[in-house]
Image (cartoon, rainbow, N blue to C red; front, side, top):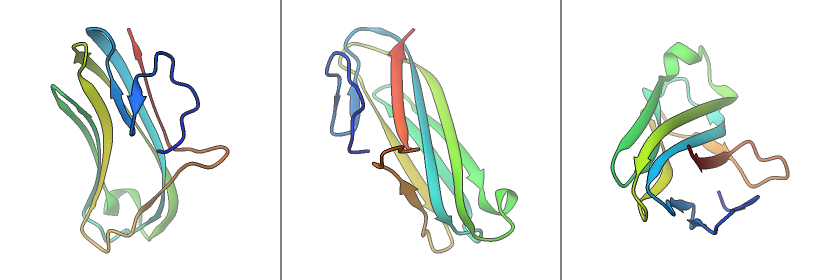
Length: 118
């Protein structure tokens, strides 16, 4: 994710969000995965914060009966963060050829990360 659409407060650097104040944050992640190997074991998506790891896992053979050209995944978490805590996204395909790509940084990029204080 190399392109910022907006960053009120300048709290994002190098794809990492830094909480400006202590509180609960709604963190959201969407991505379009390309060339997904149906023989893979699973795909794991993570929202990693200073205090906790949030994860969502998908079994390839349950979602796909053949290699998939693309699929959109969504994830969200409500994170308790202190001022200065950080959050970023992680993705890990496991098994198979691990050939999956993420579509990003296009004019209408389907890969994005957002967050706000609730």
